[in-house]
Image (cartoon, rainbow, N blue to C red):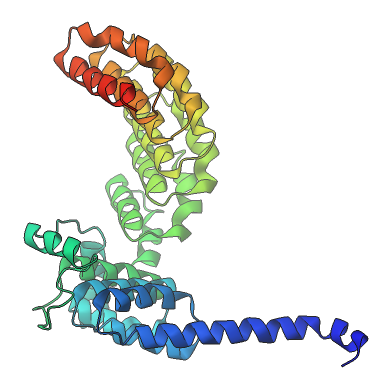
Length: 348
């Protein structure tokens, strides 16, 4: 090959090398999907979601039937990420559905499921690298809520006609109760396609609807909603402002630090100021410290406590002296938080 040939064939050579690397990785993941260690199979299930090869899809579907439920959960989630349409029937089976009506109901039921691992199972996970029952050859009876939740979310992604589309249509209904229920459902199924319609609803004259719209946009971590949410920090209803702060806390845009810093010292409702103080601690920005130090003098003890906790989270060493002044605060909860702050900040 001449130098000229080499130069003009570089894109093709690069492509072939890249394809070779991808093929090698795929072979590794396919092998890992049959590993006797459940943690390895789970890792393979997660990684295979990025593969567009039919072999990768088949491997994930196989892992979705694994004897260990944590592996099944990971595989089912990957099927949703990869939007493997062939998995729809399997998801219906996991949810125990035999028609579209029951599927729609199951999606809405399980997509919002929450629960706790049994203490014994969780303890077992720590000793087995993260997957309880990893060495247990027995198949579990049925599917736990985590697997059903994963199946509901995956089914909503690969079959949006079952839940997402009907919920989007419901946003146009005049009935405010139905509209709020639809928004809650869209948030539960992580329906990113709902963001544009939710932005319109965010300006609704009904403050309850504005509140739920803000909550849902926060659940969806909708970055495109940041400006509209920032504007709603001036909403006339404090309940709306609280949900807006929480929503922005989920999204965590850079603008939130300055916005919350203003809210924590100027909002006329102590609950809004308290939530803003807590949110500032979650944003992990030193720029929030001055406003939180000011909030230490708030007339409401819950705001003061939230400010102390956030200053502790932000490791505000320079503010320790001002924090220590509240060791004699009239409220015991504030004094307790200050004591924790002193111990953590002085020993670091």
